[in-house]
Length: 293
Image 1 (cartoon, rainbow, N blue to C red):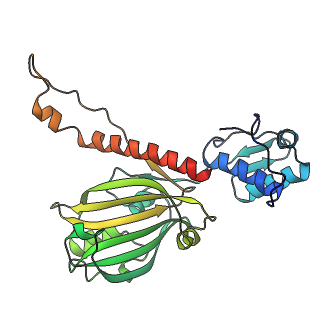
Image 2: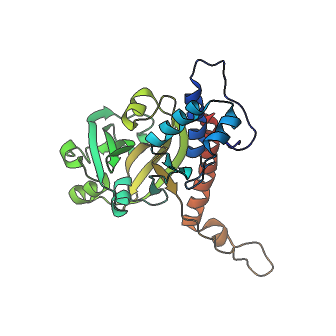
């Protein structure tokens, strides 16, 4: 991947897109994909002029746009540096929801209920085991910025008394515990990068064709019953997925024989989840890289 101070592709002078927008987009992509991590000094205006074959006014327009987005910091006499990222971290291997995790980290979390409707179950919600489901759509913010759109399906009649008012600026998992005595204790999760549709991009305040981070899963209660199917689309610039990795226990073997069945069949659950999530994140990184292109 080329960097601004190394030989690479030039801007397309024959394009209908203005050169300053092309330059801004090129630098912006490298900042967002961490080719230019926070704290990195950008080349000087003169170096960018030479590198891209453009005028000083083009460079200044591009850098000004990046500064307006908060992606770079400009200082008189010290050039431009990549600004610290305003990121929120989510531990995807834990059962606690996004609201609880962000709140415990000190963020001011808000939740707007977009819709709450009764629907017939389909193939995607059949695991809940009920003919009808409660379909919930929410927009979550952190410190005033939209960070996630959440679609959740819950079994009916178990949660038929759930109301939109009880979920405004609240954690769904907390409400399920307080009102229904349901505790989320386990679940299955998948992560992938997907293109955002028009409505999703509008809610998250993203540009057209931007990729988003999709976390899908099913959650189970303290009795092992499926109580939630969800899809959460995260803002790719504001949310980072974290995974705690633990070393796998050594495989026990019997004297002179193969590994015992108990050692093979009972791997450490946390390490196994982390390994699968790590593989998913590698696929996500490839998908995000392709989407950026």
